[in-house]
Amino acid sequence: MRATTLPPPPPTPPGGTLATTTDLRTPFFDCALEILGTDGYAGLKLAPLCSSMGVTTGAFYHSFSSWKDFTTQLLDHWRAERTTRLVELVRQMPDPLDQLENLLRATIDLPHQAEAAIRVWSAIDPDVAVLQAGVDQERLAVIRDAFSTMVSPGEAETFARAGMFLLIGFEQGDSTRDPHTLEWALRMIKQTAADLSAQRSTS
Image (cartoon, rainbow, N blue to C red; front, side, top):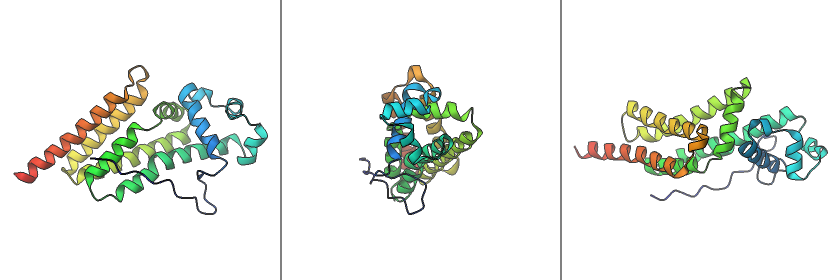
């Protein structure tokens, strides 16, 4: 089933903290995620960030009050764009197979190397650990809810956790990271649930 095309993110309301596509902060966030993906958490520092963007530190401090302010906003931006917004959109879809297809597509498209670096970061910084746990719980909940309309609650929990195990293992298994295998495995979980639901509806 074809995935529904996701609309662009809505603009941030006045006084909001998340960047929009026209926000001057967004290029900093995009560049930081690229650095996390290529150089890991240890590579994310002010000088390399500004050098990669071709800007001065003055330009950085025009947008952010401190490095801590930047990293907090960066992680909030990542959570909003890669989890919260998607969860809100998926929950509006009436068909559970559409929900699962969009979740699957979004999972494949995640910045996996950057997310792996954020998991390393979360092992060092307690605040990041709390945010990472929140992201994992948001993702688990929306997957479980999609499965719960097809199978029993216990089975939905198992299918959802299996999907999360695949994602987390994929992101941490740098030498074995193969997106085609990840997609195949996720589709197997989705198809198993769909087959189980179909069998019960005809019995």
